[in-house]
Length: 284
Ligand SMILES: [Fe+2]
Image (cartoon, rainbow, N blue to C red):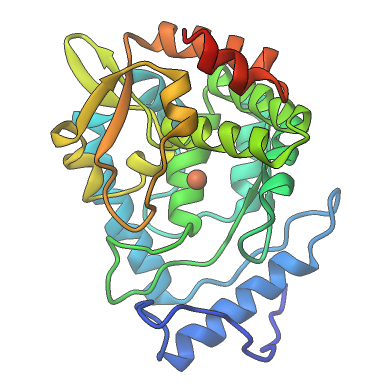
């Protein structure tokens, strides 16, 4: 699809690596326009990525793949192998969506940028992951201050290609819809953060990552074993504040993949406004 050059109304923070790069800002605006124009049910329009954007993908996906072999859990590696995304260029979401649907009956849909919390989680109930399409700034290919297509696709889509994770994301989405109060949504969001974004689990005597935030961060995936690793504790996860601008100093480990899957499935399936109170009174 041809991309127009819309006006640049990007709201990047002052310390964003691309904040004063006018060409980058224009690219971000053009890619956002593709996402904004998409309507559910229509084919996902392609983005024409620039050579430096494909170069960022080549660099990051190659370096992350090395670290995944050392630090990612088996279920993630299986999902990534099945999805088999290109490593030499940014994959089009149309391709990611098509393969994810074949593998795990999950959809990916483009969005121009961050969407409201309830919209993002709610879409998971419809087995749909809302994904940005823009690429982080090329000056720092191994760092992004915000979710970009590297985080969405290498972190989340590779997970979702495993049907067990796909079903878990759907349960999470349904749980979010039953959180009608802001307190209940906040507790749910924190558990999501400490599990599907930054979760770790024990596998063959080693701590391995299953969270998309860890799996898409070149620096943090090699550092997470130095964090304070606490045993599985949903009440603690749901009440612990976190800072998205630093490596997570505290992580929660499941005893195994099966433990994580069972415990989270039960938690999401039963989640409602009263769950935080019940958990804090009777921790499990
Ligand atoms: Fe994420």
